[in-house]
Length: 290
Ligand SMILES: NC(=O)c1ccc[n+]([C@@H]2O[C@H](COP(=O)([O-])OP(=O)(O)OC[C@H]3O[C@@H](n4cnc5c(N)ncnc54)[C@H](OP(=O)(O)O)[C@@H]3O)[C@@H](O)[C@H]2O)c1
Image (tube, rainbow, N blue to C red; front, side):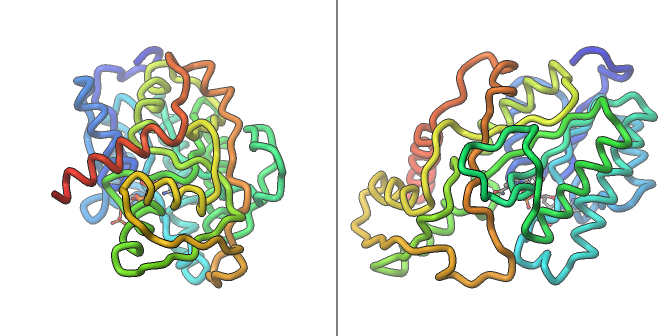
């Protein structure tokens, strides 16, 4: 890490027990980069005194902590707002005061998904659910408080450390001979390991501003399900359907595609096509279940 006052101190990973956070911790450990995990129940990002202590002792902060239950956020708006927006504004202010680099994770759900092309960082956000609105509010509070901070928006992530579309579809396939899967939502299934590697590069280069990160290429959820069961060699009938067939409390964007050329320019190698890390993930999972 370069440029900031306390660069000898460990990186604080907020939400370090979560799906992305746990892979970031693993990536830091692999590189010999000292990090400290902060997460519930010992640490609550909405507690300003606790946040101030973390920032004071950190060389840099990565905020992977978030209220991530998209459907429940519709009925827990205040809690989601405190975690995803207010606490992020406070964190950004504390980091500016301490000259501590801040990397914050956000989401494609800041967009409405109506655009036909991949979303760029400069496209206008227009959230269509409470979760997306709170994440956008968090980005805005962060940018007002700390223009040197960095926001990395990710989309359709999966990893070994949490429930996600991949693990849920595999679980569903274990109990049913036939699955109906949405074919009008498109995006790039993105491994949290790949995200973690990109975050390490950003920690090193410490850019400011917003970046989009996703695996290369895209597919509908239906196509992803087909790829998964073909790889696993499972003979399951998969039928396509529209999002409207599944009633959920929160609406989801139909287009989650990102244009990642801005972050790609900082990375040492081309971002991998979504199929490669997914096949690796499935193989590791298979080995775990032998
Ligand atoms: N998963 C996706 O598809 C996706 C897509 C786009 C963006 N993102 C973003 O990626 C980031 C990482 O999410 P993830 O997928 O790793 O989700 P996750 O597994 O739910 O991780 C979030 C972590 O934050 C913790 N947390 C929640 N409230 C907290 C609080 N008040 N104080 C401290 N920690 C708290 C959670 O603890 P508990 O588990 O105990 O609640 C969890 O360990 C988030 O910013 C999310 O918005 C995710």
